[in-house]
Amino acid sequence: MKTKFSEDVVALSDLKVNPGKVVSHVNECHRPVLLTSRGRGVAVVQALEDYEQSGEELAFVKAIAQGLIDIEEGRIVDLKDAKQRFGIK
Image 1 (tube, rainbow, N blue to C red):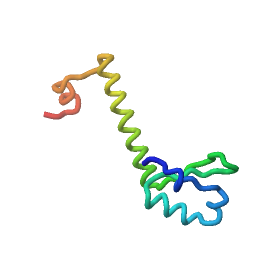
Image 2: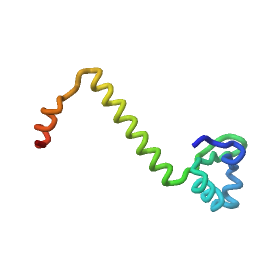
Image 3: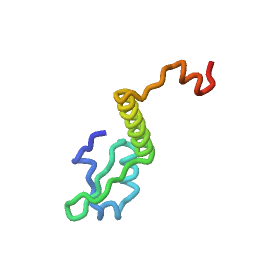
Image 4: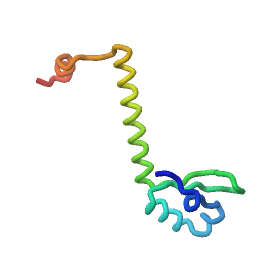
């Protein structure tokens, strides 16, 4: 999902003229569009599906990182104790 500056940068004035074109673009290419005003970035438009997926991926990576920290700091439970704790045989 790397930005293509030749395609994925849109002036706010262009967005006002044809917002449907920008929405169609992000839905088709699955890349966010950078909105600019006076040559400076001001916002990003991203397809809802891609936004939700990014959030899920970030939460997953954070959970893995926390798990690795827990292991390093000795906060572990062996499988037998975990099964017993959750009532699994």
